[in-house]
Image (cartoon, rainbow, N blue to C red; front, side, top):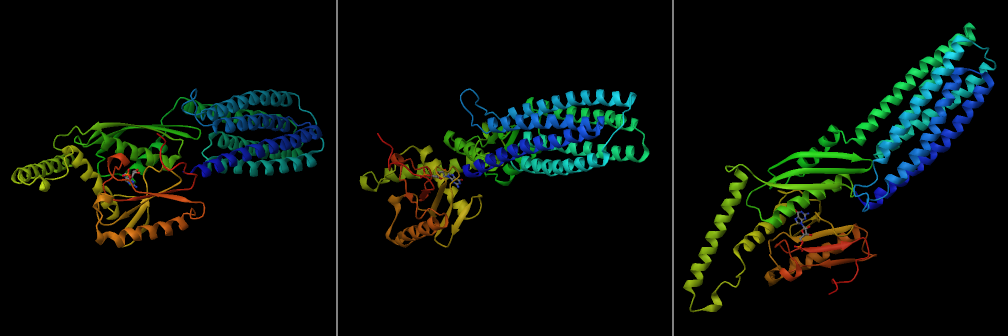
Length: 463
Ligand code: 5GP
């Protein structure tokens, strides 16, 4: 998820938290006014619950602000868990209020008192309940949209407030119709029990979050993303664990790879897992990938790698034979004297882009025609990082021939089109082609990097 989208999400949460605090204070005033008018203990229980809303909304504001802070050296997993703490704190306050409500209800059940101004009181309560309903639904929606348990918990709490207000309005209406004053106290006691249950539920949710209880929904969505983007070399993924801390998702898993992969290939696969998961769950996600060699000696994928290696070894033996035959003519010897494993690695890496071009490996393709394909880099180094690749497999710039001139020129036209499409044509961008070891070329299929979307700094790393 891009950084600007994340910032917008955080701003939305903070704005909603502030709105909740202001609205809760206004509604509290309305309910106390109703209590002063009617003297009803059921209305008092409702108002007491609203005091908690105000305190809880202030706490939610604090935790939303804290959880938005990025990880630092003393909190390497971020500050997201404060939101569970906030939900737990709110649960504890609700339980406290339930006890108070129960006491007031019992008193008016045993010693019923007259209730004046019932009509005005009921009207005020209806207005307060309507305001609370709108606020609660808004908080739940924003909490879900911005993955904030604190906002969602606050929204749920406010909805319980709506139900209690509705109960109180009905009970006042019954008292007014029947004149039976004890109903007011009885309803207050029942509300106390209901509110107690809501508080216990919130505390248990907070406990699960703080104790990193397993989250089947999160695990299912991680599995779905990995299945959708599965790469050819991924034999299996197991020991998948994940937990949420507010906005932060922490994921660790074991990735089984063919036993013949080189260290740098295995690293590239682990990096791909990390990039895919960060794209889905946000850049602040922590991903830990443990790579395992495939344990099955008869695994078809591993044997395919072995077969590739043997084929390449045979090719290299042919090269040696050729070199012997040409002993008299040094210039005809193969120029390439790099280690055989390096050659193999380069050949395997080169095919990655051909597979992307042919649609065998998934990539975010932004342009394609019969000469050139462009797709977003799997490990972007700038907000815009696109690779522009000739469909023909040319290993490096050193292998470009006259017949490729049209295609190479066309790559620049595609760069211009994409710069306009990505909105970086005016602000500026950099086109870069790496060639061989000193330039750190990793994929030996000629490609042009297009970087943009932020100031790109000096052209070369300083010595
Ligand atoms: P080089 O260092 O060869 O100039 O750059 C190779 C680029 O290819 C790197 O930036 C790397 O992130 C990217 N890359 C490697 N494998 C894949 C892949 O499977 N998909 C995509 N989209 N990019 C890849």
